[in-house]
Image (cartoon, rainbow, N blue to C red; front, side, top):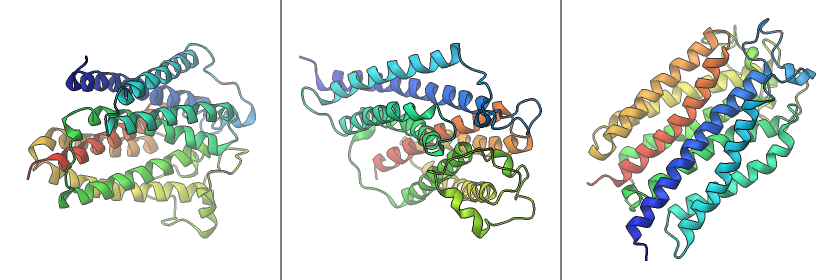
Length: 312
């Protein structure tokens, strides 16, 4: 009969493969979505939002096939991983994480039915956020099957990490809205959006992800400007909170390596955000910015888990 330790190792290895596949899905999805929208296309910004006006999608072959094959294999692997976590006796918290991951994959499969229509902002919004949560849950399953899964009393030093990760999640959600509503060109300047330093009263309606999008948001549009400004303010606050929280985590031996990685990703993510705008929304930089945000959230979660598990 398989020992508990061997079973945990198998679950951890399966979850590691799931995390790698989920990260690949996020990367391919971002590339397909942003290139199809015309981000950084020749004749920018006139060609932006080309899918909204019936323009041809530049990726209909190998890239889309790779995405579907990877997503399908990931779904099958998620079923297998959840089964291993639950039978013969549930191993917690790995079983909860693996079950949540499987449920999310099934949900995203159904959302994909409506994703073909780029005018549905909610479908794009859920897909962008869903990809991020896929990586988060798969990596949480990895941690849950390792030594960090032991229960621990939260320490005072984790408060900034909690707040920073919460704001990072909000920042990612705002970035997802910018992408889903095709609002990239609404604010092509730094640090503010022209003369605007705070969202106009008429711009707050852009926070509604269920609106139908007919055309790409125009330069200076109140809704697009509101999304950009809120995204940037949240990003700056995240930089401050996670930066201080990460420096505090360096004091814990078990969290030192993870905290160092998180701080490095935090700086890279901030630089990518600035460079993306300065480059006129280069496709490569925009894809890297989105993918790095996902990696940063997963790294921050690992730091939080290890800080909580650190000995007194």
